[in-house]
Image (tube, rainbow, N blue to C red; front, side, top):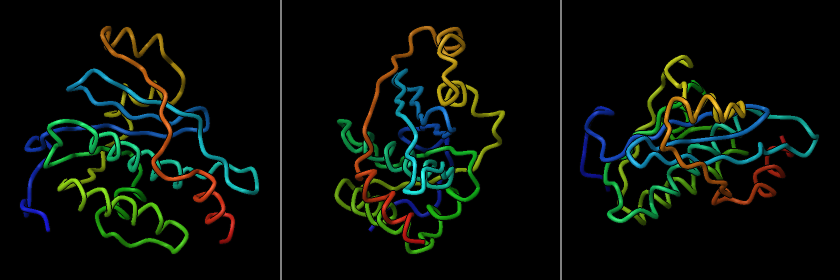
Length: 167
């Protein structure tokens, strides 16, 4: 299905950093000086689920990457979420998160993208951490030419929230 057996983040055609907080979700692609933000997804009992939101950000980053021309064949996404690192590298999670994994697999197959999710320490995630905390002045000081866009995830937040609410 995918050509590369093993590669590092430096071998990737594109690297993206993602993060989630109660204030905002975000990812950024330094190669394009582009970042994307959205409000967090709140589950059916009105609580914030960091694991859900981190996973949705990775899905969103992959979805955005699949729209690029040329489409990256090797995509590295960096996250400070060990849970997200684990599910995207094992493709195994609890049933309620399967729609996210299925969406990821579909995008990978349809667009021939080899995805590797890398775990990083939070302190290495400065730009996207600032985005997710709404520290836009800091972001612009660190990356003056950055563009900040709003985005919707490729999977319905309602579908995800209803699945999580059925725990």
